[in-house]
Length: 216
View 1: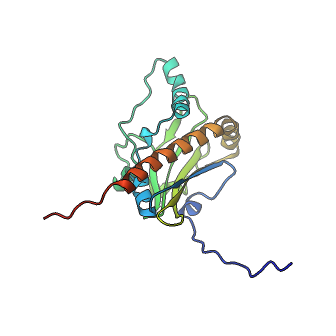
View 2 (view 1 turned 90 degrees about the horizontal axis):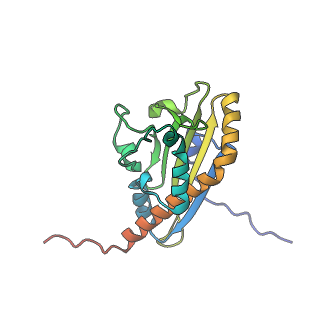
View 3 (view 1 turned 180 degrees about the vertical axis):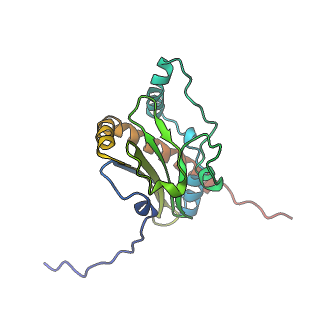
């Protein structure tokens, strides 16, 4: 049977692949959003990661803070963690959180990451500059990067993907993270999906908002 002519599909490299090549410790979720790509991208960039909520997400967050509560030590509370602030506020001096901007393709892709020992009861973070992330190899750590990518989907719709990848810096930390990942991977999926729902709601509201009237 003739399969017909070979089809060619346009492709574009991801900044994410240059920052952190795909590993077996990864999780990807996606959602269709009834809003144009530029609207979806703006909603993604303005997302406050600390505003994400769902019953399961809140349960995962609560469980993560149990070790601090058992030690009668208040868990650190950040006022906000906007994606845009990672990219629009350069430098790390005085930063209250360890996440850093890694790459951005405006209108299409946002990549950010952090270095940590996530398998410990209380996560130990290693603050690093954006330029140091890719070449960081100090033993004993896990490097995690996350990326939002916006894809056009038909007319005035978008497909938004959210992916998290982790690579460790030596065999011992890889073994520790592998055991940790076996426990938390489902929870990571919960977080990613809750985040995508938050972006979707924001993008839909923006798409339905009537255009501003010109002054005068």
